[in-house]
Length: 498
Image (cartoon, rainbow, N blue to C red):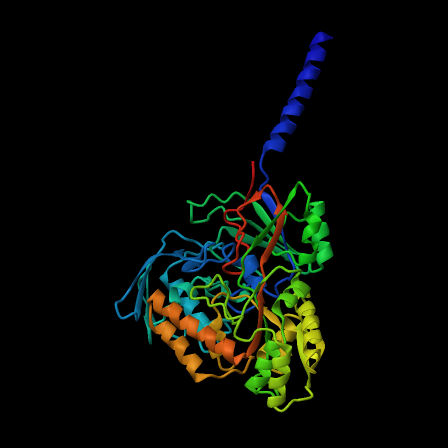
């Protein structure tokens, strides 16, 4: 009997020890929440940032990469040399790298990826970034040579973007639905309307990065209340971009969840069709800018979270100038300028506003402000991304719209022709050409400052505010980026605290 009792106690002790060990073992799975589900999973063929937020640095990698401080770092290219005239880039590629399907990465694959991005039939969202490349040479499997038509001072930075991801030739056509890359995670499954599942890549080339997650899921929840409920219930471990600033206070006192406020590149601007009356008159655009009280916009649209901007640039970017004082809020001056432009009684127009909360709320605040100067703005909710991309981005069929431009250092979009603003200014375009012609950081910053000033004065768009990165996640989750120099959810260093 004593033996039996002793055996029973030993069994209980064993069970307790087993449970303690299980509890002590760190988790190796994470569920990350996102507000917007991507329409596809190939960042090299479509622009929406949600694609890269799932795949960039998780599934796909580039010749270079952008780190969490916004700096260019080597990746599939371990080093490079630039000729004195800035026209030849010679990359030494990493050896021993394989794609998730077992195909080896080499210079021919890198050449294929860049040729695919810059080709005549390319749909790459940043195709213009490859326009400076004249020829591509592959003298051996580990050497790639890019010969340029003219200097491209930002080329190494551009090569780190999601749109510059290196893809495997045979699987490239299917990357929209079954992405294959070289990254630390492999694609497992996409349950449309619900989530994307990833699993650790056991053959990941970078042995210096101890990937601690075995699995990761990106779960798509558009409703802010549902986002908050999922976090509080533990159904979602992290929401790196929580979509409801008005609910941030509801997490106060929660011992499990932590709130992190960081920086982003999300520039909220109300773009105008610069070739459509009355927005073709610069005085009208300037008047509308003076009708806007940015502080009130930020409070009404994003619960006071945000930084006002006076041009298409963020305080994180090199060469930033605070130009919010160029056309500060002054309803009286705005009305006078409208009258000078021939609209003493104002005018009526429509804003095509995506369904996202920030766009809807900002539109409502602007609507009230414009009414103060006699301008009537009707709000037309436009489904994002499909309808907005078709009507605004591609067809430029709109008066005014509002969107958060997420790409870093994208002031060059005003030099694109065509682009949905329909803004054309040769002096501005020349400045952007000069930026690329020099690799001197100080000179580039000076030129970027001049470009910002031109936009602040011309007002091709109403420059409103930069959205912060409002992250809410389990306090034991470590390694998520607190700031966002590039839209992403990089999981490489993410782990649970032991």
